[in-house]
Image (cartoon, rainbow, N blue to C red; front, side):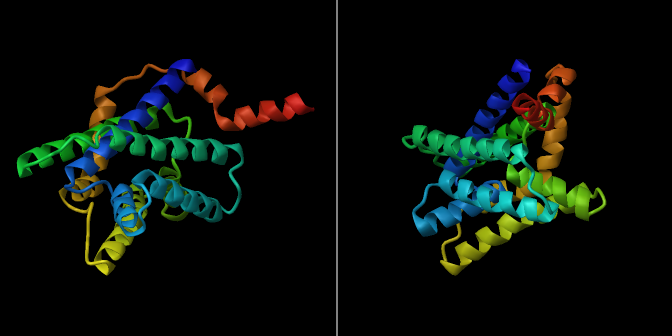
Length: 226
């Protein structure tokens, strides 16, 4: 179980780092981050804080779509989302003195960021201990509403922040964060994750992870109170 938690922490660090790289490259970010950049520019909030606010809204929407509160899973998903948002802000603070100039370098840094995100997501899905509310939205749409169609579920779940980012940017006549990196993330992220699935093998103890997962944890909590 400790090994799984280690990989989970590594994935959130790597995911936040990849997103920070795409922000610094200013050549397009993943849809949720792109939306947060446009809202950040409009409101003055940090990118991480906007992601946290959107995450809370999506967490509530997930439960409404699921038609029930997800119990302690929601608590852990919230904590994961919170740490992800703050880590993006931390990486951006560390990188604030770094300048990425030139079209070629910006493209390279942007693609490197997207690949870091894909590697992090591969690890995160393999560990499968918690779900960011954004990812939980995709899962709910796929399983409950779209008969397992993951492609359509991805298009809808990522189309929401893309439409939000475009709306805010166009309304302000100052569109940022939506460019090549956004298109690559939107169209190719699934293929990149599959690539890293073949390259990264965690060799986790599935029995230990299953025992630790939230429903079992909640079960043990209830019995300890009895």
